[in-house]
Amino acid sequence: MIRLQNIEKVYRTDTVETLALNSVSLDIAKGEFLSVMGPSGCGKSTLLNIMGLLDMPTKGEIRIGDNKTENLTDKQLAQFRNKTIGFIFQSYHLINDLKVIDNVELPLLYRSLSAKERKELAGKALEKVGLSNRVKHFPTQLSGGQKQRVAIARAIVGRPEIILADEPTGNLDSAMGNEIMDILLQLNQRDGTTIVMVTHDENMAKKTHRLVRLFDGSQVQ
Amino acid sequence: MIRHLFKLAWNKKKQNFLLITEMFVSFIVMFAVFTLMVFYYNNYKTSMGFDYDNVWVANYTPPQNITTTDSFQIFHQSLGNMVRSMPQVNDISFTSANVPFAMSTNSTEVSFGNNRHIRTNVYQTENDYKKVLNLKMAEGRWFTDADKITGKYTPVVINSKLKESLFGNTAAIGKIIREEQFDEVPPADKYRVIGVAENMKDKGDYQEVENGMFVAIDTGWMRNAGNILIHVKPNADAAFEGRLSKALSNAIGTSIEIEHLDKKLQSKNLLMLVPLIIALIVAGFLIINVALGLYGVLWYNINKRKAEIGLRRAVGASGADVSKQLVGEALVLATIALIIGTFFAVQFPLLNVFDLPAGVYITALLLAVLFIYLLVLFCALYPGRQAAAIYPAVALHEE
Image (tube, rainbow over all chains, first blue to last red; front, side, top):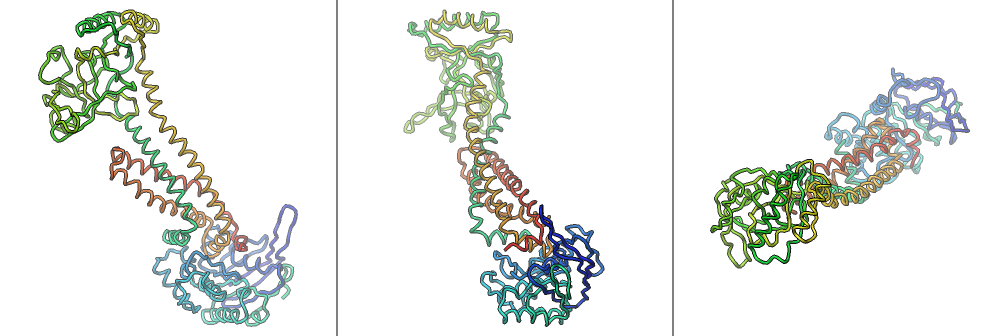
């Protein structure tokens, strides 16, 4: 599903060159649930951004499905992200000025769907994460766990084949974290969604199919 | 997407209130400026209705030592003959002080049927006044010597605008016009229309055509007549002007002043443009302030909303989509301000404020709407493009 070959990422400033990823190669199968672990600053989020086509590697090749991604234009990359990838972030990244339902609808705005269709799909996604009763609330009226469930609903509303989750339980207590993990496992098992999750939590990582460890930008496991 | 933009604008109404107010005030100011500009432009396009090239006006104080009406008549005849006899002079006409492009006005109120209290300029003229200014007749005729015979009604020539005000589309020739007295006194039949002249824009290029009525100078008026319109030949130069001035001064015995109508027009036009220039300066400063404010707020918004921009990029927005969204949001705010502004602006034609034609207000309104949209678009384009250039991975790290 996702193939990374010899991925290298270097961040350059005027005076400093930082090697964030050093020759990382990964094959992630369709329907796999992979977790990425490693200390802070080891390149986990960089790897996820590169997988999510939010960032470009300095060297190496990324294939998602049968698609090579290096020659895609900004517009093509955006469309690819919109249709294939769902993102979940540690800090939720909800838009506080929009209601829950409008936040969930967000990826669908960039597809040619009617308002009715968008609303219907967003409603179903919220139902999946158990938040049907919160559609008209604003994010500021929700708890951390509820916010993350809204973020999951937003990630799955467009029925992507891949979900990239960057420390989805990092801001939550263990009970809330388990709830979120259960939803992700369900998405993986029931819908066959490929999930790549960055986490610091060994217990969460143990629940996934495979664990990849990074250290100083290199894959160590 | 448009619905989404309106939703965002509505949900952020408190934050957007000042921005909308700023746009609304700018719209109202621009509406006022454009109203003035459209009004002036429409007037400018209207034909002057007479020729002022090579027309001079000699202003003098009538001599005080002549006491009888007969003596005044003789004095004017000899003065007129003296000027006419000069080789550089084509025609002359004694007239009242409200010569074209002068500050002086002379007006009265007339009525016909139910059309009461119609204010009109009154011009005291002679038979050659039409020739001096090359006035065009729309109907009927100009004054002749036969009109000097005193009758029941004073013969008058009116302009097309007054004809329309008094008679609408019906014929004017031969009709009797009443002159309004004080409110408690009923108007008395006084004038008989013998001709309709084309409109004369005698207050300058930018002035609206006003009602006008030409009356032949009678002997009573001769005592006050202190203005001669002189149509000179193109070769009339400063040396001739000096000779003319000297000859008139010797004949009249008081100081005289000679002015050229084309120069009077220039100074009158400048005077008419003063309010527009002031309005443009005030509006210019305001617009610069609004543009800088708008630009600053949009720039600030982008920096404040980097995480949101990153998120939108992650869920499928291209750089162009982000740019369009930010420009769209600014245009939505402008639309809200313009809807409120238009509500107030349309009251002007509806309530006939300042008695301007509705077309002037409507044109000004459309121009002001277009101007505000262009201003907002101009101010939003660059911040929008900057937002499009934000790298999504970097933006997503902003909290």
